[in-house]
Length: 628
Image (cartoon, rainbow, N blue to C red; front, top):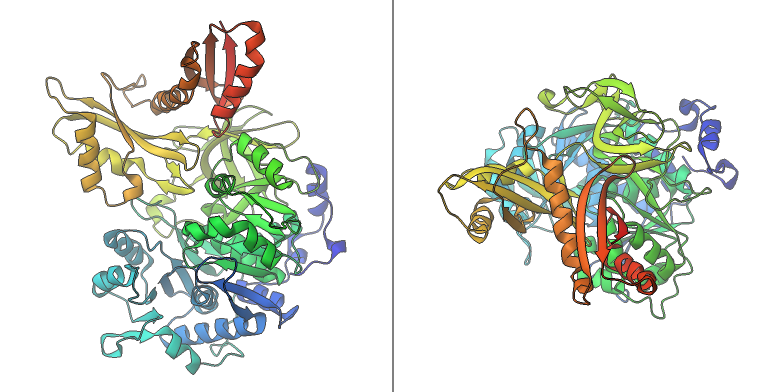
């Protein structure tokens, strides 16, 4: 899986991608499994450090260093330990862990032994239970009872309700073997480090992992990932980004996130790179943000990457005397990157931001800015080699009607070697695919005449807060339990840091009174996931509806954008200008805010335009100034 300089062809446009595809993909991939691919990466230089583990998240602390020889030994030992406790190719190891070396041993050792299901430990116990039941987990790995964390409390409260659980391992915990609880750290040394004792031969189409895609709220949907899909992503991202064993990468995304697993773990390990684990809490640790530039300098990180919210936060941290000349690439994804944030980040660091697009159901990225071509801010780039990405018109059942013409907005659909084979729960598969093998992203976009994909909105209702999905149905169902609520609908409002924040619109029953504050408190008290609690509740006289009586959510999203933009532009009103904001659909941009300004002389307009750009530049929704 390693590439020499000669193996990195230029990727400037679609013609270069098509040239790469003239060689069959089977000749490109030299591994059938993640275990084999990581083994190949480790063999490049067994004494190179694979993981620098930071515990405090500071630039000055002494890290724990794990070489590739040690990493492969621990992966083998973890796989053999799980095998000894009954894990075979179709059995599931689940884990709830922060970013620790044991997390990586569990992840890749688990995939070598069976199927891995990473679970967000920030979820409430009942949500965790539902995911573990859906996965039919047999072995569970979790952080032990340490001060400052409630992971073990959650796990211990639900463990006895998992019907097929055979063993639980505590990381950094003593275990309690009479109760079926074992110390991960004490037990792992009992097993061979030089081979898989099972003798398992992993096939490309074997299932490697389950990923929870129901978001931070809502019913759990478990997407199945194959070894082929993950190995393709490791090869494809490495190729498209031009990464090699000489690169170093800071890793701060959690391992229940596809970006943390594939982009910040699998790809670097397959390439023989070093990763710097930015504390157990990753980017959620404020010390990491504070010391980020100095961490890059100390570990000579050539690749920087994070979700847009983190990059936005880093704009507030001066680089100071840190030497970040080592940094040659900044990669982002998970949610839309505002154009002005990309520009500001480039101006601050001297490095252009490469944006990519994908989803859990395609095992990672499917589209990325070309490393040797034009990075068009506002676009997520060109399709990756051997992947087909189209925009399409779908019928009411989500089935393909026709492909869209260039620059025509449609639903983004994808086909290729990393498209998942479906969800564990069969009932969710009916609407997952627009046609055979073509996954329905639920996102709206247009593909221009040069093959660049521009996202314009979402056909599905999910609210994306800081890269995490929130199911609006959970908010709506909670509001509908209030006796004063006739209709309720939740949407996302734009936010410069989180991308979106959940808000709710409520139509009250006739002759019944309730305040927005009362309803907001009602939801907050009853909703299981704090991130899903609406930050605003808006009372409206009548809910917008379609001709067939469905709630017309686009109008609510436009209203939410307008409210945010009017608040931001209040500074202009304070200067005596009249500002009107109207938001609606646009055939090219998807959503467009018309900002009408009156009371300004011709000589004032350039300065006002600059001010509007500064005030609204943090948002991904396009705006257009109109003078009155």
